[in-house]
Image (tube, rainbow, N blue to C red):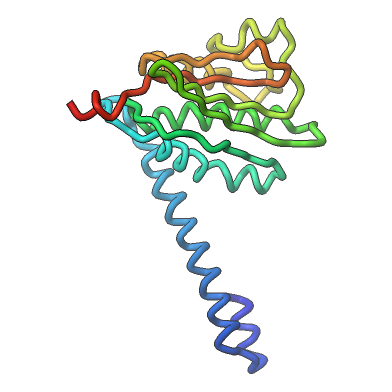
Length: 205
C-alpha cells in the first residue's frame, strides 16, 4: 500500500503496477485469514469434542499453515514429503497440537546448526500411519533421551520450556489409540507420531 501511495504522489501509477500490487495485497490477506482461522480453532478447548473422521491432509495443511511462516522467518527449511492421504478418527486440532509441539521443539534444537532443515515423512502400514519429524540439529544424548517424555523435564535452558509439551503430546496420542516416540535408530533427532487409520469402507458403515 505504501508503494502504491508513493507512486501516486510521483504520478507514476500504471494499470499493470496496480494489478501486481493488489494481487500481492490479496495474497497477504488470504494468508492472514487462513492463519487466524486455524489459530481460532487451535486455541479452542476441544476436550469434549467427539472423535470425527478427518483427512490427514487437512491436519497437515492446518499444522503447516501455523508453522511455515515462523520457520521461513528463521531460515529453516520445512519440507513435507508427498504422501498417500489417510482417514483418521480423531480430534483434528489435538493431532495438530501434537505436531506443532514436535515442530517447535525441532526448531529450537537447530539454533546452532549451520544447515537447518525439518523433514516430515508419512507412511501407512497395517491400518496405522507413522508421521516422522526429523531435524538437522545435533542428536540427543542418551541420558536425556531416557527422560524426554517425563513431565516437567526439559533439556532447554531455564525459562525456555516447561517440560510439559512432550508428555502432554504423548498422552494425547495415546488417547487416540496411538503413540509418540523417539526413533532410537536415527542419528538425527526424529520423533514419530503413530495413529490408527480407517478405510473408506469402515468409515462409511
